[in-house]
Length: 385
Ligand code: PMP
Ligand code: GLN
Image 1 (cartoon, rainbow, N blue to C red):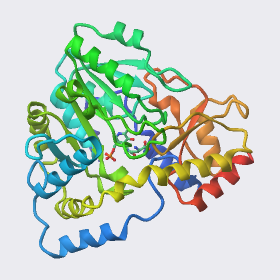
Image 2 (cartoon, rainbow, N blue to C red):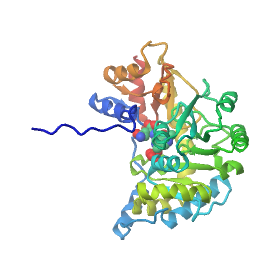
Image 3 (tube, rainbow, N blue to C red):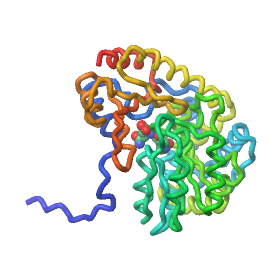
Image 4 (cartoon, rainbow, N blue to C red):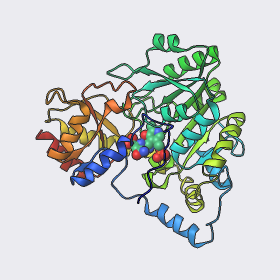
């Protein structure tokens, strides 16, 4: 007789499988073009692959130091200086993590205590709230205002309570494709200082900004730098999402705390890839060229979709384009995404899943980090709907 399943109380009873896994699986099952989960379908740099092979073949296969390979930490510090004009201490202010996801989890776990409130702006990436919950905190969700997904400053001010510990921002924003301005960050800086709050800034799309102001990192603002953790992803920057390597930048006291968690989550990140990235980063063109590269893809996708019945929203950053479909259907966005995958062969992500309240604005997210052929084939199908 098979034993009965063991009884277990879920620590995340309201969490299911992430939408990215659900839609990518559905796309594969129905042989649909996958514009859902955010990852490129074109090859990564062969130079980068050669570098990893080189370091693997030359004995760099054991544990890296817990905080990261010193050569990579130094190159990240150089990159930060190149992008922001500020010198970070490679030894005490940077941590290499197993993707931004690990960086976010380690940081949230390090900063949030039982009873703390954490302000999250919806639409929000789906890993923030569960990490807050597991730490015994409560997330307080505020909705960004359409069409440009701007912060409602009065609502934010009103949401800050004596329990508020932390604000999480995502700039550029997935799925919105929106960016924060220098003025927004200055305002945020005034607010976090006034209320003595901490800040996490998820900046994994830092090199995909299509607005003349460029990317505004929290690390450019002295007060935000002193009370914030900025989180980045080499997976996004170098088209290698499967490598799962990112880094956190924070002042020494915050770095110390997040490393206490990081050391027991993963201890360290795979060595040959760190060594390869350190070499690859020596040529700034590898990241400086990205915004132009992706802007061309965004523009191609928009051009191809011009004669469809979908209505694009502004996209100033990330590799996601939002589209309203109210001219086509009244279906809920999750049903629409499923129907389109099964019946029309294109998978997308419904945006209601990024809202705590499940707010359905009849908007789908399409990933345009794809080859011209993929985008052309997908748009052909989408234009027939
Ligand atoms: N934050 C956001 C906003 C994301 O879209 C993603 C997905 N790549 C991550 C964090 C996680 O990044 P990584 O793949 O490096 O874990
Ligand atoms: N960040 C990616 C997206 O938004 C997915 C990452 C993941 O699958 N966890 O599509």
